[in-house]
Length: 357
Image 1 (cartoon, rainbow, N blue to C red):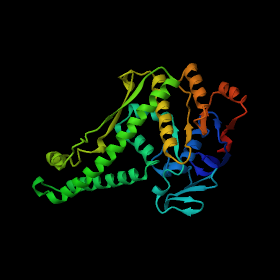
Image 2 (cartoon, rainbow, N blue to C red):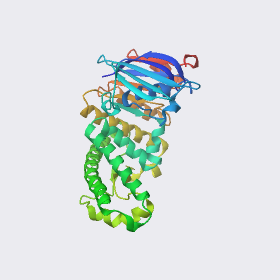
Image 3 (cartoon, rainbow, N blue to C red):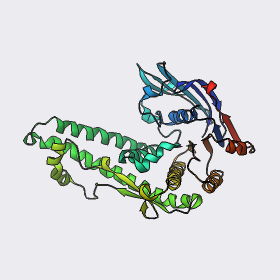
């Protein structure tokens, strides 16, 4: 499935905008600041009901406006509308029918977004890496998404309970046991799924990196959830959990460590090597979504060529033209590359200008 057309109103820098796309390479060209990233984010928003960049929807509303609206028309004849108003919140429609729960939409339009901010997967905190994997899995496994939501809710309830107790001796063991039993069950499920997907990513990234570079990339799953996790483990941590008011055991502490030739990429990789790792990782995300989803994913490349040398750009372009991809979006601002792209007859070129926003 691919997106045929998009209509945007008051989203970020766009007042009103519409564009048509092809089932192939869509090349967005324009100077910095014209809205290339925002257009890609609007497409992403239609898939997951949220921005890939701004966590607060109020930040996605055009200046001096109170709401935004994004509408997308897809190749399977479905249409989707995302509407957000500051006072009333978010609404998501499929063929003009309002979703009662956003979770019911996740996975219908699988998507991958490769953007400059993804460098935080290497340099940022572990929560960004967990979010990456959770977003991937949630698009193909609704049970995982439900379990993850349940886990976060139970974890919050346990922490809130501990914060409300003034003295350790006042902790109700039965209440804590109930939380612990639920968390153990959810930890086992989520940990097992994450471990399976990490193994798949490791398998895929070797094949992808062989196409894009000479580096050997790998991913290590770091977790404190043991295979024999039990109530005894939680009991041993209860005192420290009480004083910190946080639950110390669980998948919320998971991390994923990235290597290049058995050395930490974030420490030893060049900017170009780090960039090609991120691209490889996101392509692996695409391959898993393609394998597990009923629909071909859409893949968005924002400022993809930045910090890549000519050889890496050549290898990347060659790979993107392989038949494994369906609908691709690429944003760029280099005129020399635009001139080369114009020669191709099978690429949809969309030139963005300030007066269109």
